[in-house]
Image (tube, rainbow, N blue to C red; front, side, top):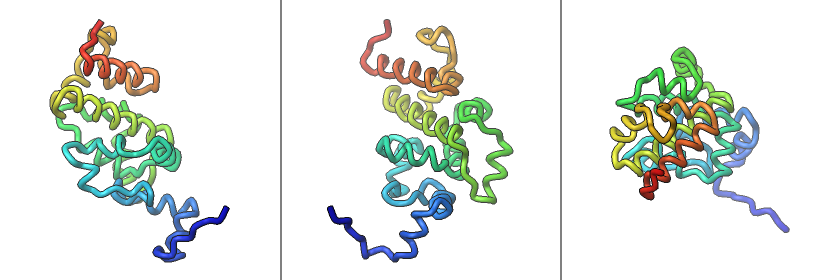
Length: 181
């Protein structure tokens, strides 16, 4: 089996991406600075929702992004995209502090794997809620309101764990199909 070599890219750029420092540097800009093949057009990411970036990635791309670390700038964009949800509730769901967002702004830092996973989880659930409920405002209200099917728990509070996120995703799927019981 022979390896294909892409001569359209300068070698130094490809080598820089192959090193951990090169990957971190490529990710540090924002979501739009993701290295190929994760690179997406800004318009595709935003569309009607800032959360689409998480659903447009393949599972392996999402895994790579989480393990490498999501840029703090991307987390800041995610936080800024919520208009109805309480900022502190969103920060708790992602597992970071306001100070972490401030420190990472200037330095181009990356979130750790745990916070990156939580941010991706939040983005995926928010996008699913928008699809099911029809608008971002309705989705954010639903995420911040106790749900009877979740034993009167607030959906965004359950996003702190993968098990809680599964419960919220399952409920959204049931709502989409009209199965509440």
